[in-house]
Length: 325
Ligand SMILES: Nc1ncnc2c1ncn2[C@@H]1O[C@H](COP(=O)(O)OP(=O)(O)OP(=O)(O)O)[C@@H](O)[C@H]1O
Ligand SMILES: Cc1ncc(C[n+]2csc(CCOP(=O)(O)O)c2C)c(N)n1
Ligand SMILES: [Mg+2]
Ligand SMILES: [Mg+2]
Ligand SMILES: [Mg+2]
Image 1: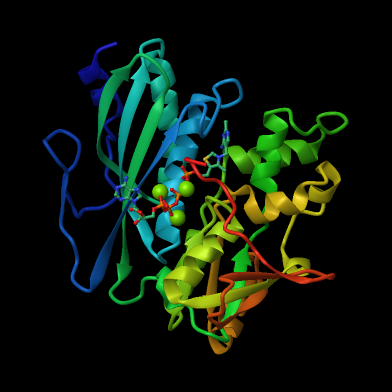
Image 2: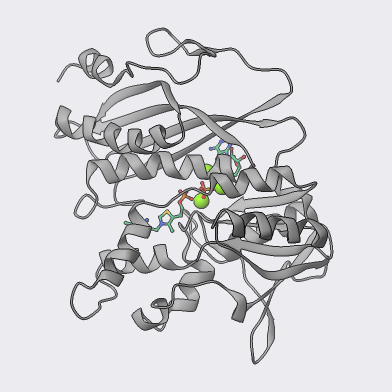
């Protein structure tokens, strides 16, 4: 395999945005930014055996997810994803067609969002695959949904359902099993391998006056802690309101742990004023985008996040995925 032939072969033949002045082929990409918009930039890495295993992930799956998790960060700012760059450290045993398949997985999503691949970097490595994706997006000036924007009396919401990705991972790692390979198990596995970033909901949030927003990578509890810390408020959620797939409790008695601390659902969680919540909920309903109220924001107390269950009201720990714990 030749590095330069590889780069040539993954260079897109068409460009969606005429604002791209120089894409792949020079030292860096160049694009013309518009007035009245703020540029959003994020980067996230996926590492073999930390974020996925080759025993169950195809190259397409890996590419898809590496881009999806970054689009999710743009969604969590209320933005529109536009460009992406891909940095690869590839073990020598990978073939060119496997690498191209990874780009196919990314392209599946890029097409959906009209995103252009505008650059990256390719190196070899002796050991594990490392994929780093950078995404550039934009949001109308002053409209970004920041973690610091929560205020007391806001409604706390979450999109879609939570815990499904952790269930899928547990099935893939054979920690949980289910009689027969039924439709349901494939559903959870797919939620883990192919999360769907919530760009449309993020955009609706950016229309509201003030929305604090985070995407769920490390787990609902961890993301709510980040909003509470950043906004100097306390967040109270009601366990009975957490949206989970009806089959989740059937899979494993750990299902509540999955929902609160599992992570990688790449749903959005946030806070919004009561008045704007009604509009957001209606708009989501009209567009068939699932969203649910799960709690409310309080004046800051010693507990950043509080969980109300049928039996008790307790502090919800900042537990969740942490690379160094
Ligand atoms: N190694 C680093 N150097 C500089 N800034 C970093 C580094 N790692 C993270 N950050 C910054 O810290 C902030 C939080 O990053 P973090 O990765 O926790 O958020 P996230 O991408 O939403 O979550 P996740 O990576 O779990 O999906 C971001 O502003 C990010 O750019
Ligand atoms: C093989 C394997 N073991 C464990 C996990 C779980 N996991 C890894 S990273 C992460 C949080 C988000 O990552 P980051 O913070 O790096 O964006 C989670 C929940 C997995 N996906 N695959
Ligand atoms: Mg990150
Ligand atoms: Mg995030
Ligand atoms: Mg993380």
